[in-house]
Length: 342
Picture 1 (tube, rainbow, N blue to C red):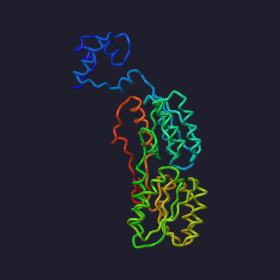
Picture 2: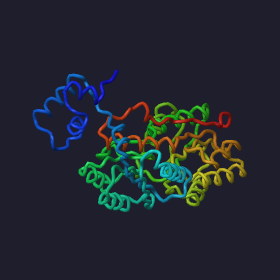
Picture 3: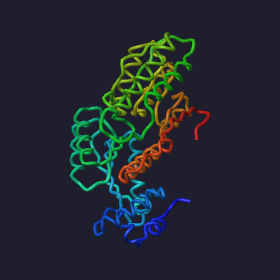
Picture 4: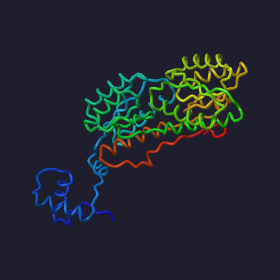
């Protein structure tokens, strides 16, 4: 049975109020009495339950989520998940603010981080962009002892505390294995549709994908990536142009968003007699329909709600000085094909 503050008071021969003052570092306790309490704590092996103490005090955790302004379905799902958790604030004792910045704009993200740093916050979660100014802004937050969690796209080289998202290099390897096996016995070229390779998740997915294709499927050639900024209209135009320009393109890996435009380009290609094996990310409504119709062959998915809840748990733990339970915060890579749609 775990020792309690009552056990400490009894062992030290002091009141509960005195134990509380010592444990919380408040003044008004003689050094001799403080030594007795600390000796009792060590003897009994007492470990303070910080979360329970904060609950008893009614502590509220003010967190800020910095999210990209983007019309792609996954980022909208992420935004909605944050808003849902915001509504749960009274239950979870959180006060969540949302700051939205232009997508793929490192200067805007760095400015938002610096602006948030001037407020009274217990933690920040953000979608990372690979840029020195963003890492520097995160460093300034951490210098103020404000915990930072990156969402979806990590910044491993920054001072961030935790990353809440899938292993994107593993996701790319998974996509490469699937596409390579779907194209077994065929030779040809593979198109790559990305939002921006300046974000770590897209770059890491391509890295993993390239490794598998180049080492395991020598008959497949990877074409230069199309960076369409996750914009559906641009994706449709650029993919349509790439398909028309290269009759040897037999597969596409869409490692970002912009899938509505991609689907339009693939439907046009199918109408012209071109069947292109396609692996995409995120099970949005239109991705689901593309799987059902055979336009997509497989979709890799991550749970936006799980990532947001994980970020909140980690920020709370960091604010309380507690360890993170790594297994609880692991985000899965789900693989969907037409036959196993939920």
